[in-house]
Image (spheres, rainbow, N blue to C red):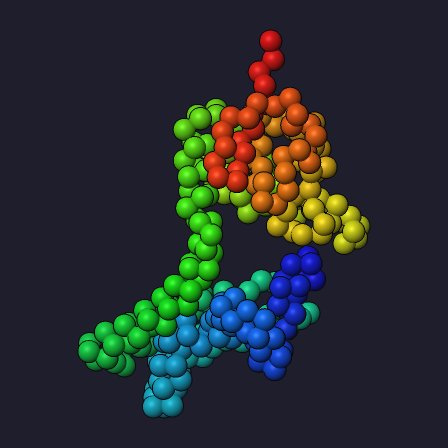
Length: 265
């Protein structure tokens, strides 16, 4: 799974600093900048400003038993970060998430060693460091009205009052959003065993793990008696899912089509 998803999008956390960043920035500077911001090491540098105060505490209060215990315990987060940052261990998840568990300890030390004015400055600095990358991320993902279009789509689906709906979408991320809004969703199962990468890719369209294939959607329609299918026509047209030919087109919202299984009788 790591090979298919994690390593495909970022082959090496450390290799980014040698080659990855420059290739991405040269190809598309804006998207490359987002790629840089989402590197786990870069996230650790700008998102954990309290971490550097911990280093200061370690240097200035190295004789203090209490501080040494706090620093020693909180350093476990950095050790876990390092252990999960290599190719062989990245299947365990994003390294920076392990460091996040120890933020309370960094915070306690920061508040204790800094005066009130310094704490406010650190908080402001930390806010700027986090919000600037966040601004670029949101701006990129909202380009072409992606957020606005999906918001209108979900409002429309909720207005249909589809009771106990079981649904899916060819847009894998949209399928996750449907689930978050209380709709039972069929989508590829990551928790089961696949014999090979080829078997895993059968669920997807042209090996793109953001797109559920027409054949897989047809399988869901037959096996799970779906009542709702939302097709993102920017990915592929509704006609690709042949079993939708007699379904009712409830609404069109931008490039999305909302289909409902016709009632029997």
